[in-house]
Image 1 (cartoon, rainbow, N blue to C red):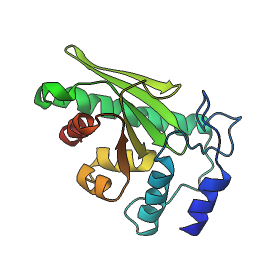
Image 2: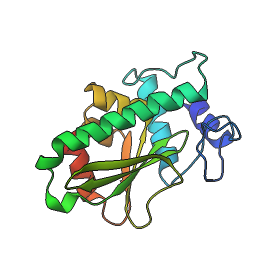
Image 3: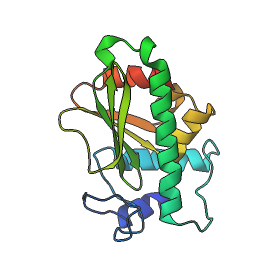
Length: 175
């Protein structure tokens, strides 16, 4: 656990208009939003306890990692679309999601025609809620091996922003 925290601190990068998967960033880790460090520590703890898989030691390129993350974000978008009719009207505000670690940002907009998503964006939407999670936690939630309630209790998903409760309800319905 201490090694994970040290890796996070040593890998700190000032927020920029790229994510940690870009070649110029410090070893692939950015602290892209307040609360990112806490989620990263929760992920390290969940990995130590076996709740989440250990970090891959497989030598894969950042491009491949990015494609895996984008596929999971598209799966989230599909889940949001599928649950759209069950989501209360007050829970349809746009929100940003950051995958802690690389700082990969996405924006989600709930519309009557479906959920619009923009991936690999420059940061959060101004004035809207932000969801913070990690790629491995998102994948576990999408696979059903981790409930969103459990993820929230363990700090593997966190919310920030003026009124994040509607976004939290949206994700609870969708995941």
